[in-house]
Length: 310
Ligand SMILES: Nc1ncnc2c1ncn2[C@@H]1O[C@H](COP(=O)(O)OP(=O)(O)OP(=O)(O)O)[C@@H](O)[C@H]1O
Image (cartoon, rainbow, N blue to C red; front, side, top):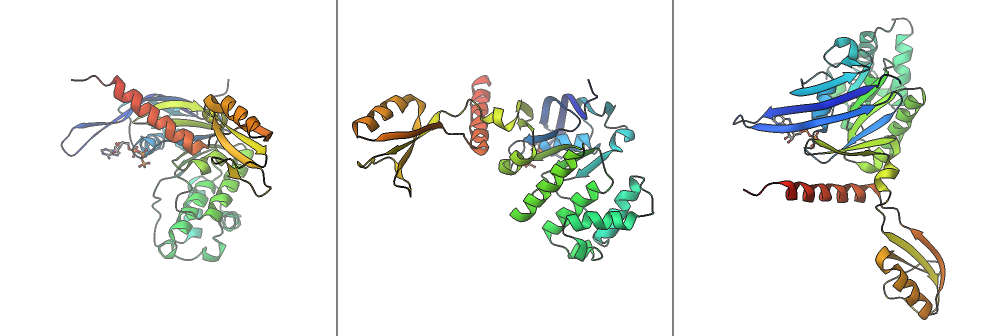
């Protein structure tokens, strides 16, 4: 079995608030990400995503448990050598240009000087930044700055990318372009660990998800698994003259209606009685966003019922 790209074992983090009260940001998170995987860490605000990422990148120390990159403790600088990181709000040197930023990033990764400019320009080109390569970063827009940070993370050819909300601040066109760049990175064998609460973007990028909520990992699975088994509705398409008050008329003149599993049989009998011909019945896949919301609501209900009444 290969060494995991990332391994978290019972990871805990307790912060102290202003009154020195304990705030449990991570209550024992364990997971494993294999080399070549794209793992999406998903959760609502305050779930513990950034805390996990800060521990993984060595910015914060955990209060308990272990975080390993390629089998090495994240506090060991060798573990972080092959890491490209983009924080939630990237801090870049305002007075440097994107080209200077990328040169520094590549040099820090030990890349040779020869051919460095062309290599950096190639990355800037991919991120649509060639025209502003020599402008000061302080004059760039938020989306451009985000793209500089992503290019900076990739320029040193890291084996692992850790990205906190990588697509935030990007317009839809750039979201798609960045997804394509990241997918190309994966095809070349790179591993990605990223956080997000924008599931439609995450769905395109991740082959596995972990949902974190209130500092605990609630479930792991692929987008299909998270959706799977949760669809309890069917779409029924029928053809007929008699109008169906609850159904929608499609441009082709046929009727369609989403029906709960429990009432499917009664609905089909109603269609038959109305003289409709049934053209199609298929399960309606829940969108991941809906699944996620339902999941979080269920977890809140479980948490509330587990809380002892005092
Ligand atoms: N420096 C800190 N001091 C005290 N509490 C903190 C600190 N940083 C984070 N927290 C708390 O820890 C919990 C987890 O925060 P974290 O930033 O990891 O969540 P997140 O999932 O990244 O949220 P978001 O999606 O809003 O960025 C929250 O309750 C947050 O208020």
